[in-house]
Length: 259
Image 1 (cartoon, rainbow, N blue to C red):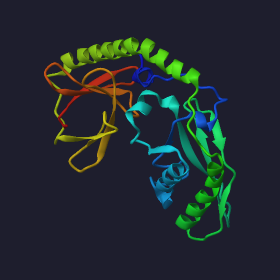
Image 2: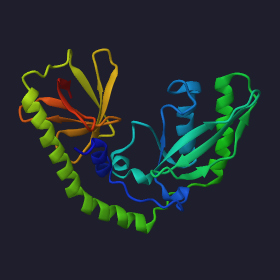
Image 3: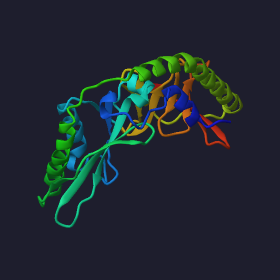
Image 4: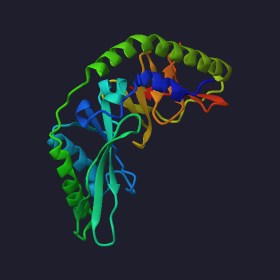
């Protein structure tokens, strides 16, 4: 059985992006909740600052997990930013990078620097310093005609295949559920679904802990689980099923979700 991650690539409608594109040819910027050097999300408050600075200089920026439906369907219209920490003993040094959906580096700033001793203030100042190069870009969105044509063509060609992949996947998962339906146990407590981006959901348990993130698909009542080879769908009996495949085995578990 094909890994579900392949299905997600179809659903996202990935298109080939030229490494020669300029920053102006991208419509969105995605800001991670946690950069690689951070020990926890939002450390030093630079993630929110990064989003703010991109918006200040004309970009349409979103924190990871809060992206609009259009970007979910056309991920190659966006760039993902990263803050590189190149600090020394006495000086905080950072660079701002922008990477496309093919992991091509489209932009890298010069080092932003600060000698402040307090970490939060130092990273704040260094990040603002690095963003001088972003400001100098004078960003203005300019979509390429070839991209518009490619997106339209991809949408027309890929959608039937996407729906077929999801339907086949759902049928296979239902085979597992038929075998294990009687033994499937409803998880303790009710899970709460909170909508974001209009069509996606974050699922929380009774302790308000994030259990999973569900991403939209064209098929009714079928969602891809973010960062998992899995889907969540509603079967004919109206039961929500969490179906997981690791490439060698399949498991199905019934869920109680309050939407």
